[in-house]
Length: 346
Ligand SMILES: [Ca+2]
Image (cartoon, rainbow, N blue to C red):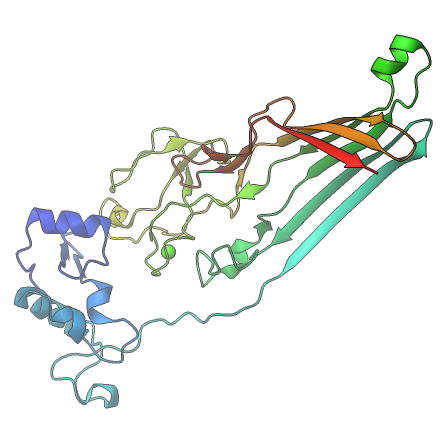
């Protein structure tokens, strides 16, 4: 077999995306066993025949001839077999067809503790703490439904997207009631304070490489690989430091590493576990202050002020999931807000 005189630019394109249908060639890095390669899109997309006519239409004659040579050399789909009766040159069997299952499993472990003070002596409160751990292999319809590797769905088992390890909520009401004394009574009577505070640990997010590194035609579920400092690959990637990596660094899988590895296909599925990232914790602090003004026994006016995010904390709502920017905030909950109200009751 011969290399169909591809230009270096064409081969470079193939090194980053083997699904390109207009390139092919021979891996010359291993001269004793040069591996011919042709784009999988050109020869098979769930078809029982050889060259995909839709895509082959756009190919150069050299590429198509080269694909024919490779398929013949491997004895794939020789003409004359039942599925190839209408194919003039070479055909290959169906390619792999991963099955889709609408199944998943999840486990939830939880512990809750509540402390409630019923209203008396002008106040009440409720303090609630929850420890929980949610584990699953597929979260919901809003998350990518397919695993990174359809042949290893067990590798998807991890903490769930909605796993939240700790959550503490405190809410209370304090009513000052009638204060005795002239000016003191006028100033400090009939106030009500109602705080609500929540501490919540961050929820996980899935760190992805952002492209279809394992060529299963799904780009949203490919995860990066754990790496070491300074690690590079043939796709011109350099490992980046990440607090979410067990080894401290992440790098995406690279198909082109087959060349420096002497023709051995590298592992294209990332070994970073699913949902390995953790969003920052959130602290919500809301407060309602109100006061009633009684005009007579029937009529009173209540003025209120609600403050949301009282301490004006920067609470991260979402983060970037890409491997080299994982954890960078992309959305935040509201800053401090005030809301005023007046209510007349009679
Ligand atoms: Ca993929």
